[in-house]
Length: 477
Image (cartoon, rainbow, N blue to C red; front, side):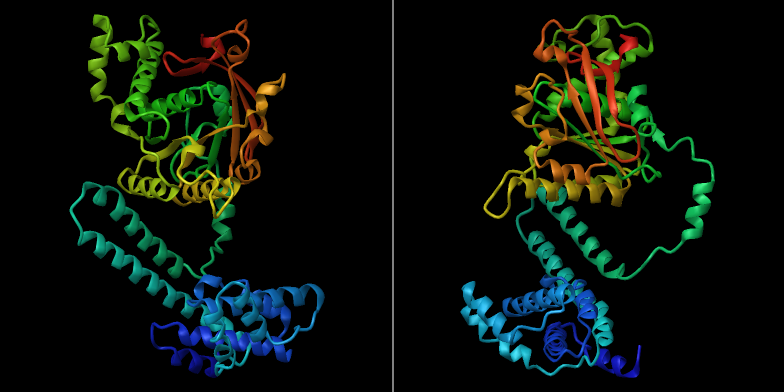
């Protein structure tokens, strides 16, 4: 960094960002209107700045015009069409911000301390740190405000963990600026070594394991961080599929989180117990009189069923399967997953049943349904990657399937299909032929892998028993 630039940065020795904002905007206007700076260089610079970094509406308007002109100049070598300040003023007036328009000229004519585009680049890290400090302070004030209120269990179970997670996220984003992982040698060495044998957890379904790289990825393994979408029309067995996998995984290896936005926690627990009992009897090759859903619902058991049920209270499955049953926004669901991941180091998989019931997924005044769903899938994909877990997201498909002779859904049947397809690593569709044709085998289940970022696609044949909430291989039935 040159002495001149160092001197500029040293002048900005307070936490206030106003001086940076004014100088940045006036400098950009100078470069564009006087044609002193290269439009390509300026274009690259402004794409690194978020409009939300600017505190006031008139500054946001100025930046909007600056960015548009810089981008257009690169595309068509256009000349700046008049005064940038005047354009910003007109934009503000047209949007109903007449009072804000009065401040534009003052910012545009403020003294610039940035004498080159290089000096503008040099101040970005400092600007981000100042903004991070403001965000940390605002978030901390929310924590203090909540703690000053009426004591509430929800505060400590949901609100505080969410805000603490916010603090960590703000700090991380500021501290990780411009850091790059250039350790190519270690990546090549790792790629040349043998793949570890214990990086996946078998689901108990060989055909499924083969399709998804050996099973569910263990936490922070080379395969972890996947978003797996399981979609179907109602009645096809989505929840049964998810409960079966969750039960098997919790029993055999890892902690599992199950967010049920449709059924109550008790209903999921009962289905999981039925599945657990069925699987245990299968392992012992004594598949006689399994505990079915109706046994639990009616409290009607044989003496053998009762004895097995009593023994399950101390099982690993009960200890590892964590069920949540309130319909919540994606931010709250994410906060709970992050908190569970910190307290359960063995958490490897999360199931969410189902996408369209997450708060905010329907269209609203601000965004379309497709946009809202896309925000959720993108957040879940980022969450899976950051924590190093696999997330199964169940989803409904459109009614158009009902009007076709082939009832197996495809990508276009997904709501907001483009956004879901973009974010998901794997997309699977379920079909029970018996649902549409009573002549078909009532246990038949077809599983179509329509997208697989790291493996094969195709249709898998399995069996399903809705009464016991189990999925199993055709040959084992």
